[in-house]
Image 1 (cartoon, rainbow, N blue to C red):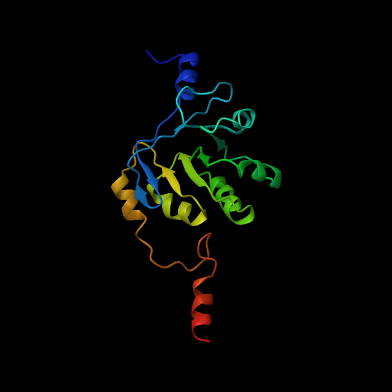
Image 2: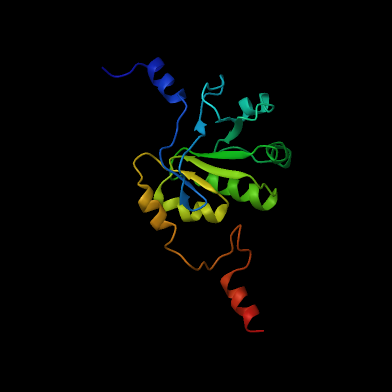
Length: 180
């Protein structure tokens, strides 16, 4: 019997723990954080990433961190509020939605956020290197993605032509400066 709408909503609002978390380029031994998409109620499980409005209403709770939707407008005021959070999760509702990359890059480069930036949602192995280059320090893989493949994918590239959040100089600039 297929679930009715109320059952489907309840399933969707249940906090999610990713089984496979890549943290700083390695498979994390454990993932304490759950992700709750419920914008109305605080999850019982802690620590938890919760929707931005819910986090704002409960900023004093140190076991909560903001979950940014991919369509979130990251203003200077919001970035200043987020600066106090120990971690930020950015949702990828579909692997084809690239707005999360921009949010991470803005957090790191424009607003100087130093905490953990975690990719959650529809996160595939193919995206990990790009996520890391945009400033993500943790990526919660979708259930059907294999952590061994993820670790291998993160070691494919040893040189990048373009600058990123960690390497601010393009490869041609490095070579040009080395030859001076």
